[in-house]
Amino acid sequence: MSYRIGVLLGDDIGLEVVPVAVEVATAAAEHAGATVDWQELPIGRAAYDTLGSTLPDGTLQTLQTLDGWVLGPIGHQAYPKTPKAINPHPILRKHFDLFANIRPAKSYPSLKSLHKDVDLVIFRENNEGFQPDRNMVAGSGEFRPTEDITLSMRVITRRACLNIARAAFKAALTRKKQVTAVHKDTVFKLGCGMFAEACKEVALEFPDVAFNEVMVDTMALKLVMAPQPFDVLVTTNMFGDILSDLAAGLVGGLGMAPALSAGPNHAMAQATHGSAPDIAGGGIANPYAMIMSVQMLFEWLGQRNQDRGLLAAATLIERAVSEIIAEGNALTPDLGGLSSTQEMGRAVTERVSFLEVAAL
Ligand code: ATP
Image (cartoon, rainbow, N blue to C red):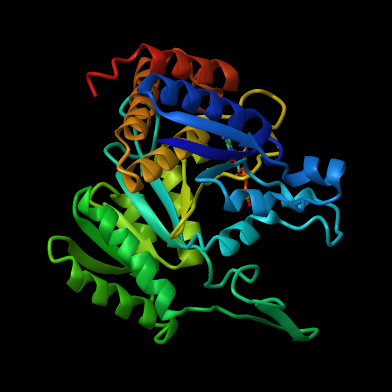
């Protein structure tokens, strides 16, 4: 089976880490015998400067026809304040119903990190909650009726809660079989209450998966003090956003935080980090998060299509990255190394091609 995957570079360090991730993934696919046709599409500041829009006509339509895509970080804070310079990524998430934002946090024995033996994944609901750019069809979920009062609306639907809970429990079956729902229904009795009800309902469908609930403030404490026991965390949008940055901080920083946004028919590889304008152009951005986001996309597509080739490509990437990290000779400065983004990427690409596919 062959796949068509879009490449949207994004802004700032996206221009550095996305090509590296595609290079690694191309080598892995070729080596594992999977056929991937990469298709670059315009988005972000470069698209605005050349085509007059940060999400040009045609990009959405083409994405619809693809199996998935890679989205680099978006530097929307620096966009000009005009209607054609919108932040495209909430639109992509909503348009393709990418309701599950899946954010793993994994420590590596050889890397400096606050904690060792961390291997957890956060399933964050992606399309509603407090985020005002996602929770309304028209208008904004935030408004200011007087100079001194601001209201921020949080949208919680049963459908979205059930969807994210099911995705989390399914993933737990392939891991340590343990789901923790994170919310605060002691205070948000209706909003978090509905989320908790949905999680409990779905838990009954998965008797082999252990289930518990932790209040979000307690979870912040537990993650900082002892994150090791956790496996799959499932939570609403904003809590997930905050906790996934916290989890990245436990294992070495944002450069170590890959992510996938997945929906019923499409998935988008998009690292947790932003466009990091402070380091853009310096060749020092850690490509791990972007490489492993594409690895997650391969795994998602491979499982969906029961495609051994693409699953093997995903395993190759994971192994190659682990080996390069363990050896420690080609790491970016945030990981304590002296290598550039491209040098770390090249080391992973070479290792991917060197590994035995038959041994997987
Ligand atoms: P956003 O609001 O768009 O998510 P942010 O405000 O969280 O962005 P980032 O752009 O993610 O900010 O950057 C936060 C810090 O992490 C910056 O100091 C940045 O340099 C660092 N950082 C982010 N990504 C990487 C990376 N891939 N490699 C190294 N450092 C990174």
